[in-house]
Length: 124
Image (cartoon, rainbow, N blue to C red; front, side):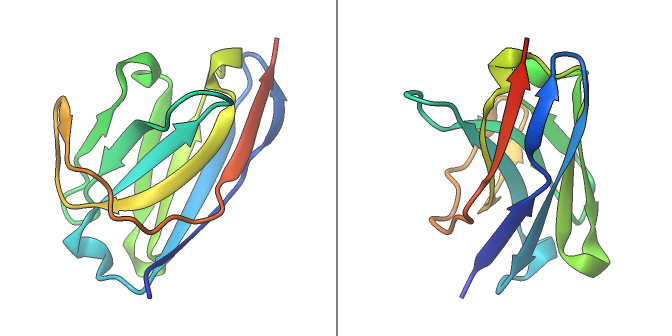
């Protein structure tokens, strides 16, 4: 069974930083890309970043480029999302999921296996 456990969310002020963690189990970690997604209240879920654990290549939503950075610890099957210069519009529940393929501007749909997410709230 594929499982993801996200953590690291919290309440911060605008301009501050957070680091999210996502630990995967039940999948061959380096055979997939791992995506970070977020869903704000009354909005659709959107992809924030996508990283290949095997190559380290990363892709980002335009609005977070230069502020967010995804990395992996393959020994721990864990993906991190370092979020700097946070803005109120970054407020959302953040999830991770396995993705078959990512490229610049085009991500395959994620596998339908989601964790509970972690809430990020950025106050102005």
